[in-house]
Figure 1 (cartoon, rainbow, N blue to C red):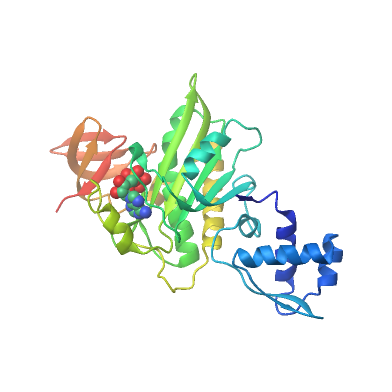
Figure 2 (cartoon, rainbow, N blue to C red):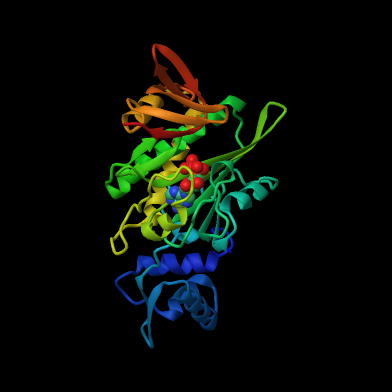
Length: 333
Ligand code: ADP
């Protein structure tokens, strides 16, 4: 595990190398700035190289950063992060059972509001209702822990707010136009590129904590993941946000997503959510369609006409209006 707060030497070396990107930085200068021996600097350079940084080293000249790895190392994420709370502490794993489970365990510790848990792969990623979430290398698997002072009903806003924040981040950073499938799927060409999972602990009508899980098929091999999912009940096809060799920065995407989501969080805090349903609806593929929603109490059919300010889906069928709080949507005709 690496964190954004323990690895201060690695982080400083990366920042110094970045600020000298086109030139060599002497080992002497690095060791003076960091107050470390030359041997210790060398050890950290080796460590960075093993993490995927390409660093040239030349005798008498020093070190030069050629490229950084394409995954979400915590000090890369905090470098340029525009948030106050979200992602101020980051825990990063090469492999973990589930980022959501780790974040749930963090909840009992102090000073973890806004902490983010990220993994390169998950061995037991989960979706809603304990469904499996396939999480190979190349995806973005993360969870955010919040200990908010909200009212309990406000938890139900988070699927809508999170999927909207992610969609906006994808629009801004990758210049793509994903759509939203109620309640919280993000799709591209009608295939799923991301899913969201909210776990909350509520005690005596107060939110103790909330963990927002997000799985993004950033750069995965859709065929391989699809094969594993073909028999799963609600499968309607998956896709990857970016292609295998396409240039795209997952760090920038996550930074933008955390920023957008934090803005929504502030809006919930100040009870200023006007416009959110409109923004969601504008990007929705669900509204206007004839749908079947599987709910815990059976299927509900109708035309999806709106979502209300709590994120519930409003259906109209033969002149009757129904409000659905949770379920899986499939599109008809
Ligand atoms: P969401 O989390 O999107 O609300 P679910 O909780 O239903 O949806 O997610 C679990 C379902 O998502 C699984 O049953 C499976 O069909 C599908 N799924 C699992 N892994 C992936 C993946 N990497 N990409 C897209 N869909 C997936």
